[in-house]
Length: 450
Image 1 (tube, rainbow, N blue to C red):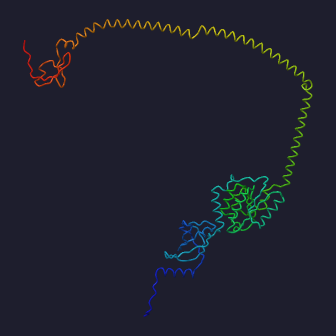
Image 2: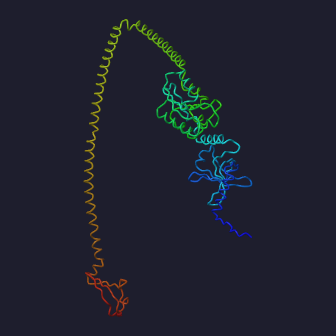
Image 3: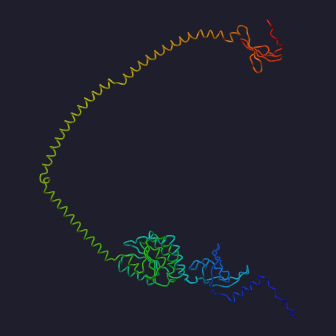
């Protein structure tokens, strides 16, 4: 029996050995599976599970790697991931830390292209109403491209051949690689600040990977936000990028973009000559018509004997003046007669006279009213005097004045007409001609017969 003491590991030590074993024996591998439980932390790291029909493994892709992906991961998407197989020591679970990830089946770049294209189209960035027209004769042309590529040589050759006196501003930018998109955006913004009339943004042909900077969202949004008209000239005629969809004009090649941005000098000269010829012909015709009208006017009666025309007009003016003065005198005389008649009518129908008559009538009516009132009052007083005498004779106060009194039983204040209404101890109120008293009944005497 062995006497050697067994090695006892802590959980942390065991976990560390398993981690070292996985990182040493398996290390970096490619693994295919379906994404599930996809979630992004506030720090920008993504945590998810890769699974197939029988097993699953935890996975993580950190923010820096996630931002470099050419597609948007989501639940249910089949992917191929490359990363380090290791152990997350805190939970003791094994996982893969992804450095790369690609969709399984469709290429990552093509998938990213379609998803971003759909997103931007739904936002309306590709709508025709946002397209700006190109200037007819631009004075300053801005170009964003590589200063060493074939594209810039083709553009300059075409512009110099067609319109050599145009001012060209070139903003050099990388058109391939991870930092190309930022440089393209910087070039667009810099040339717009310099006030160019039109811009060409592009490069020569290449693979989808080579042309990818022109599919980056920041480049598309920079073209959309620019106030200057932009021509997209990316790749060959069969190549399409998102920059082509958002640009104001899409040129199939850089050379075609140069042809679009400037007019043919000879065509412009011919157009100017045609306008000059049409202007000269029109001016000659107008001068001929004016001369014909002048000759006709010079041969007319007015120009041959103008003094006759003046004398005739003067005589006509004299006749009209005399007729006007005669009519004015007649009209004034008639108006004066009408005015005199109106003044006489007004005097007869004067409101003041009518008011004076009305005042006299009112005063007479007032006097009659006063006299009638006095007579009525006198007659009423005569009828009232006998009635007052009768009323005074029948008044209870007159009876009291002859020495009688009235008694009321208290507290109900009932008039006492019979001594039998009272009893000893009742209170009574006795009213005299002047004043009243309250008394208590001491004795009630029955009425005697006879």
